[in-house]
Amino acid sequence: MNRRFFLASATAFTIASLIGNKVNAMEKIIQKLSLSDAQWQKKLTPEQYNILRDEGTEPSRSSALNNEKRKGIFHCAGCELELFSSENKYESGTGWPSFWQPISKNAIETKTDFKMVWPRTEYHCARCGGHQGHVFNDGPKPTGKRYCNNGLALIFKPTNKKDT
Ligand SMILES: [Zn+2]
Image 1 (cartoon, rainbow, N blue to C red):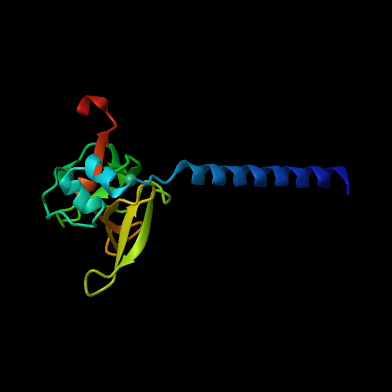
Image 2 (image 1 turned 30 degrees about the horizontal axis):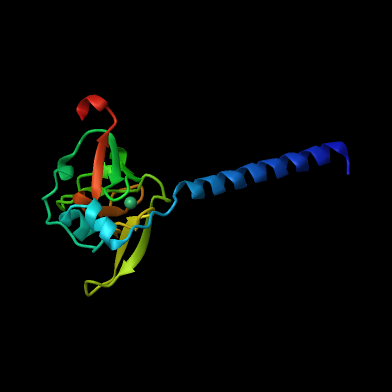
């Protein structure tokens, strides 16, 4: 093995390990939060509990976050994990806060829900498992996704502190 080849392989190996470590670090960021049912009942309002822990749905146009236009981050109302950015919010006309992508693909997890006659894709917070809403394929570009979220399942924190 000549020296140049050795150095190139060593560099490639180092880069691969660094990337590997970074991926592990990203996965470690989201530690699961597991509370008992009684703890959730204490932490949440009955309305929030109904949505986050019981997969309820708030009435259309009932949330003030529907008209929230400021820049900021939407956090899970159960555990405050960052779920959506105002950059990805849009007016879907449905009466629920709508986004075309989550803040990171690690932030949410999905499952198929058969509560209606047709299957829907339910999504929830990756940290506490709190139900947020359903994702549909009729959203705007570039993803074509519509994350239809319950406002009560979110806490909005504006980027500009003067807006709070
Ligand atoms: Zn959460």
